[in-house]
Length: 171
Image (cartoon, rainbow, N blue to C red; front, side, top):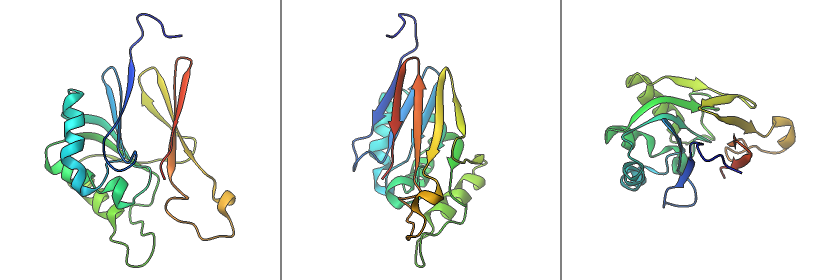
């Protein structure tokens, strides 16, 4: 049950391919979870505008595929303010030879803009008002013995607020 005076937590799923961009809000707290492709900035900005936001406290990237991280730089170029960027991948991560380096490009853009980049690990928590936001990542041992992909290493977020819990997964 939800207390009558409790703040409402909202999760908006941006109307783009899959759930490659979500906006989590609770009172004054906001988190952009992934950022879609570089062509999705206008749609994502519309969702942020509907939520009354021109900046987000946090941007969280589940994994550095272009359909999850590609929209960050166009959003910044359009004026979106970002307080802190969270990642679980090395700053120079390349999934395979010939990768376009989306992670490195995004990290450089964050650093150039003076946005703190925070490296997270499995089990870490992100402060978010009265909610608990915990990072979950499958241990390497689970996928031992086979080729690991960026999707295999994707981060998830377990969000607990009051008596409710939701698990946000990536690919």
